[in-house]
Length: 243
Image (cartoon, rainbow, N blue to C red; front, side, top):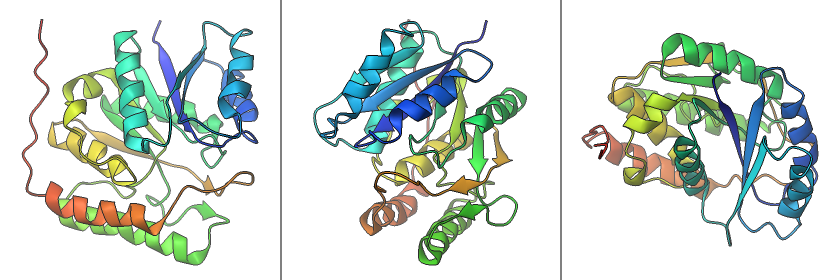
């Protein structure tokens, strides 16, 4: 049976963590969850750990001290999952901006393309609810900018709702990924594409969080802007697997 892991990075998500966990566990298909918590002072990790005893084979946590960045959280989780034989790995936020019901759509798309599937806000116009117009425009044109500069055939390169097939992550040299913030999402998709993996976009509706505080900032976009320019001139080689 295929093994599926939903990776949820958290920092101060006490309002959402129990509800998002229940939503994923209630889906058909035996999805597992790995939370990577960056020392949330609000007790997010403690809340999640209280749930593990009821689902010891499906819920897991990695606790880190301090905010170490979205990219490092995912890289840590990917390495953990590959060591344990997971076949499909999902990125998803804790705040319900990504609908857990769409995980199955991402899985089917990833199986179909054999590489990466993306829950896309922009492949059919703009599908964003409750975001301020300035933030919508910033996000939309950021993805347009990336597509223009890098030539990658993806409308929503900054999306954080993603499914990776195991082989794609095994081929990417995770230790060579340079961007740690918002640009991480761009770099991972671009690297997979440059290494020959297909990327399939799945239209989703992105709904801004109802509870908790957003972690987005203009500085995060700044890292992505300059990182994309540098990325254009990099060479990408598959990871050499030592046996």
